[in-house]
Length: 415
Image (cartoon, rainbow, N blue to C red):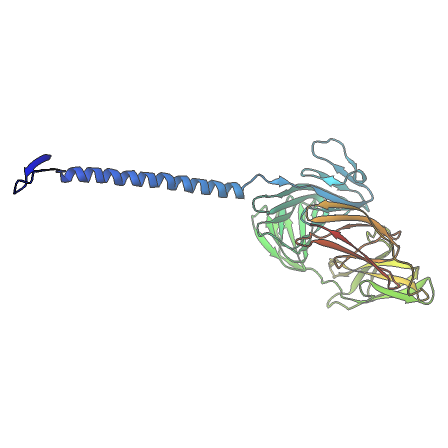
C-alpha cells in the first residue's frame, strides 16, 4: 500500500511503498522456481550432450577391414560373398567378411588379419571369415573365423586394446583367444565334435550346448560335443627343446653333399617324435617327414643352402605338441670369407594398416631379418615378408647376411 507522511519539523513529505509479506513470499518463490527450472534445463542438456557424445564415440559404426591371403599350396578355392562360383586362391589376394575358403587333400593356405593375427588353414577344411572390423572410437578390434569342418591354427599378436576380441568358432563352441596366443581348433562335422588346443597363451572356450565356459592354459586341450557338451580338460605334450643345429646356424663342411645330425632334448613321458625337413619355408616339398623313437635324426645327401625343420612330441594317445621350428645354412668350408656385396632389392612395399608387406630379391642362401626378426627367403632369393604390427616404429631395418659374413642393409621409413 502507498503512504504519504509529514516529517517532524516541516521538512517536506517522504513517500514510500509498503509490500506485504505474502507478496514478497510469492515473488521469491517464483524466482527460486525459475532458477531451478533454468538449472534443470541446462543440466539436462549438458548431461544429454555428454551421454550422446560418449555413446557416439564408443558405438561408432564399425569399420570393416580386409583379410590378406598370404600364400596357398595345392587345391585351395575361395567363394566370395554374393558369388555363386568357387575360384582358385591363386587369383585372390584380399578376403572380406562372408568369404569362404576350402582346402583339398594335401593342401593348405595362410591368412593374415589386419591386426597381425595369423591363420593357417589345414587340408580338407572349410573356413569362413565371419568378422574383421575396427571400432574407430576406441581402436578395439573384432576378429572371428568359423570352421565348418577340418582344422585351423591361429596365432594372435600382443593385445593392444583391452576390448579387442579374437575368436575361433565352430557349430559346437567358440574360443576367445588372448594376446600372444598360439591355438588350434578341429571339427569333425559327422560326429558333431570340436576339439580346441592351446599351445601358448590362453583361451576361454564357450560350449554352445550347456553355455559353459572353460579356460585353457598352455599345452591343454578340450573337446566339445553337440550331444554331451564339454568334456574334461586334457594335457598336450610339450614340444622338444632343440640342441643342434641352432636357429640360423651356419654349418661349414669339407665336402658336399653332406650329412647333418639333428638333436633335441628328450621330453618326459614322450616315446616318439615327428621330424619334418624342407628346403622351403612353406614345407610344400618336405624332404623328410618321419616319426622316430630317439632324440636325434640324421639328414643325408644335403647340398648347399638353407634348410627348415620342425619337431613335434607325440604322446601315447597320438596327440602332437606344437611344432618347434628352426633353420640352418649349409655351405662348403672353402667359401671365401669376403666377396662382392650382397644383393638386396626391395621392389614393392604394401602398407596394410600397421602391417607392411615387403617384396623383393636377395642372393640365394642369405639370412634376412626385419627389425631383428628372422624372415624367410626362397631358394632362388625371392622374398615376400609380412611384418608384425609396427606400433610406434618409425622405420624398418632390413638386414641380409650371407654365410661368409658379408652384410647389406636397407632402411624403409614408415612415418
